[in-house]
Every structure is written in C-alpha cells, then in structure tokens.
Length: 72
Image (cartoon, rainbow, N blue to C red; front, side, top):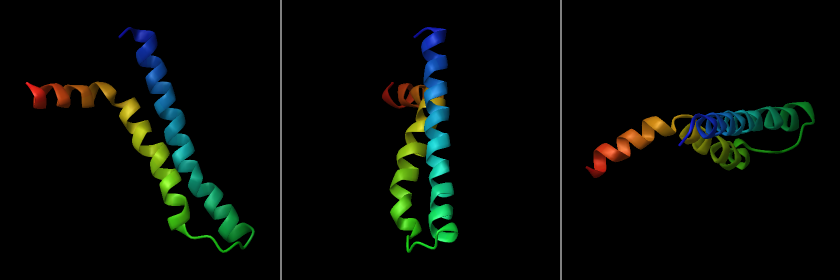
C-alpha cells in the first residue's frame, strides 16, 4: 500500500467521523430547534455507521498489526 492510498484512507476516515458526529447536530436541530418528537435512538445507528468505520480507516495500520499478531 503506497502513501497516497494511506492518505486517502485517513481522509475517508476523517470524513466518516465528521458525518457520524454531525448526526448529533442534526438531532439537536430537529429536537430542540424545530421541536420535533425524535429520540436519540433514531440517530444512533447513523452515528455508529460513520464513527466505527471512520475509526477503522483512520487507524487501519494499528488494527492490521493487531490482526497480524492474532493470526501468527
């Protein structure tokens, strides 16, 4: 894997993290700004769908090292 691919993975990871955390901004606007009856439970899957893969992409070398140690 070359440096450009690693940089691309980190950028994609950062974008996913930002979107995953940004979900809570949308929640706050809808719940408190517009007074809609939404719950945090409705937004949690979207948050996790951004944050979990985002962290994996940002820390892919760390996780790859752990997997190599477990399999060897």
